[in-house]
Length: 299
Image (cartoon, rainbow, N blue to C red; front, side):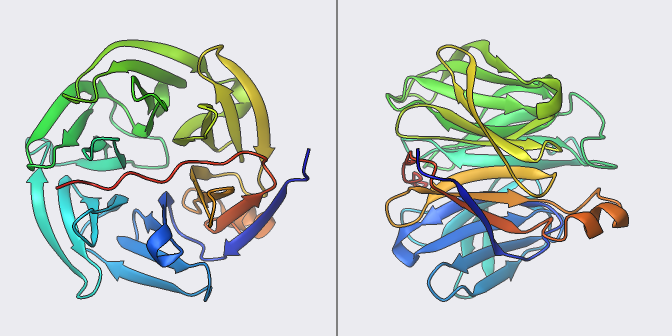
């Protein structure tokens, strides 16, 4: 077993860092700071970070096949041009819910951009319940709505054979699975594959490794956990020096490094003094397993 090393590679103190995505073409990590309305790109070689500021809370970002990025901004799926810092609306959801915003999102193996919504929080994880829904933006910019009554739409990923869609609605304290049809993007037959234990707190962002195991960032739990979705067993716990771990992805030149985003919002000033790296981005090496590259949005 190689020894696990955890380091804060970007001590940024994001209010709520989220949606880490490795961009191999630029050796960079993309991420967002939701309430700060910023998309960040951290260059792993120069160690410099650049930001694009947008006009509403930005909750996820993804690579776009035709160039540039896509992002979920407010209740809109948008194209993001990094060079001139401009955004263009591709589609809008939840138009009847003025208090809603998107939360986590990720592109599926066919190039559709899945993302879900939630009511705006009054404090972390405190919000009007059942206001959200799960959507996907198809490459032709058509939007499909899958289901509503969601509390906090969160982590999502697909099995290696593309037959299962994994999904987290945070306040259900569960990682769920659906049958998934790659051709149509349809999902069916929802079931729970893992229920979080009390000390694991709130399930947030998620990613999959090359062995088909899931990694879940535990908000308020200061850890990422590795799960076997087939047995429902937790295989590993990696604790971080900050409480609010929000999401995770694999990256680095061979996808053997894990990047974890964290949040500072909701911590008392006393807590912040105890965990000065809260809101930073962490790199975990020595896990002994690799991840897979992110899929680009095909539209």
